Image (cartoon, rainbow, N blue to C red; front, side, top):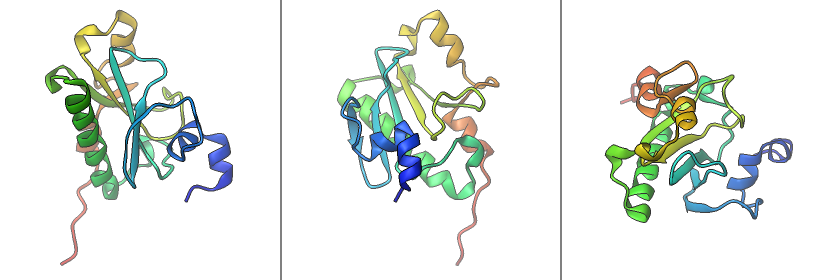
Length: 148
């Protein structure tokens, strides 16, 4: 459970706890919530946010790989099933500190990329010093060997 001090300070902790009536949650399970971005970069712009507070991509370890894979998979499912998006027209990724506006890990799912304006294309330009694709972040994480 998130401590009250984090919940009070972090807007994404408030959203995943169901304490922000302005948030539009479109999917939720015990580990993550997916909701609409308040400043969409394209027609469909969703954020997948873990319910456990993780500051940002720099805090990730190899043990977080399954969580990131689930975040991407569920974003893909929502975009495909609820919005009929062709996944080849979608972008999935993370802003890299200090270029984050909320200090709580969140994966963007944006589609269609062809509908993004010039500024959005710059803000979400893949694999730059300020934005990395979900795959690039996954590729940097060490693989954790299972015991057995």
